[in-house]
Image 1 (tube, rainbow, N blue to C red):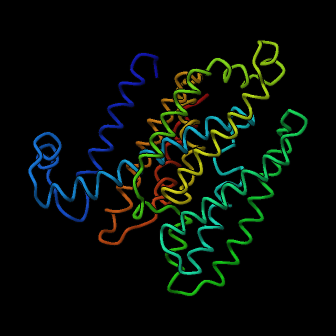
Image 2: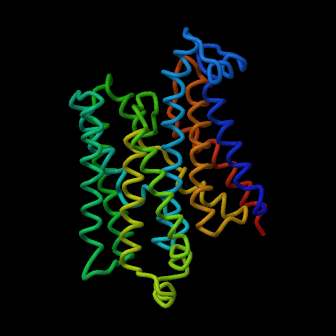
Image 3: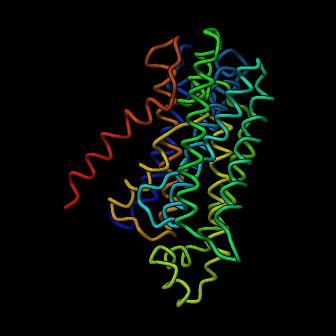
Length: 321
């Protein structure tokens, strides 16, 4: 894709994905009613469905996707590994373990989110403590620690699922596969996403240099240690915010940056905001499918991020020489 139409296209896709999320659902609403509700609001059932139910969920889905895609971009720079995604550091595993333990004990939504936050912060602290030594990062240790933690968390999660009563098992599986049906206010997630995009877009030159390797970045005058720490914590907290909103929604942080790179977007000044727009649109559309394709039954959104994303990425790979 050429340089000029990229962001206009992504902005149109983003706006369209939000409009589609408002349009479709178990309660039938027409195109005209959505348009009127946005620009000429009149109190009534349609207004309540759009503004109190569908719009908050659509905004939460968009923020979740934007955070995951942005975290994926940052971690692929930090680790210089195209297979890196937001869940490679064990953050989502720690969050999932805390959330599922709380669900197993019968906790409500607030305490479940608190337990997920504690688990995620614990994973962040462990990885940081084992990877940052003497003022510098050991990226091999960082990656290995994250993989080992993820494996340990996966084993404990499997144990909790085996021990869980049948009545609680479905809710636990939905959380593991991504579920935005209980997503609360997304204001904090949007603020975090805006802050990440602002800071790291301003540092895009340093990110471009670091992507070439730490030695080359140092030769170009980049403060590598500080930048790596900022990338790590930025990506980790973006992942935490996304997981608290929608559970473990997979494939977004891996697929979206790759798809954009395959279309020729490599400069992080463009790649970061483009990934946020594309990731947000992608999760918003996937969540709309998840709640409408089998209505009134709602399906996990993580299933659709994979079902929709895999063919797209395979198509782009097949066209790349």
